Length: 180
Image (cartoon, rainbow, N blue to C red; front, side, top):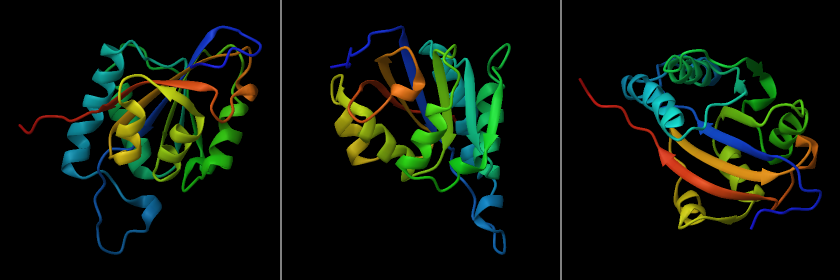
């Protein structure tokens, strides 16, 4: 159930794990680009967000190349992409760092998109979800693969109030593009 302490507007936190990356020899982890499958799945993630009416007011993206490329491909599917902030703290972040990033979001933002990495994103979803619709929590517990999208909803007047168990996991999707 969504916690209603200090009820406020319905807010959504949309979590997108970067698309499938390549492992080129001699390239450091933050500089790894997307693989061919990732280049197909990135636009599919953007289409999935649009079809689910989950377009963000603001995106916060890891500075890693694969996350930035995922953002560019996904947001390229929308008429006018929202503002994006690239934040070094998103790379290799755990739940405390990710919550710090989220809690700094301006209160006028109703839908926030995070583009980043596992295991931090998966752990964040499980930490924040007090409950889930259908089998969404079990899906995330089993696997949160590349190009996975989780949508958390909660009522609150400020992002700083988001905490463990305060959100409802409403949707989990894994975006996959088609080979051409």
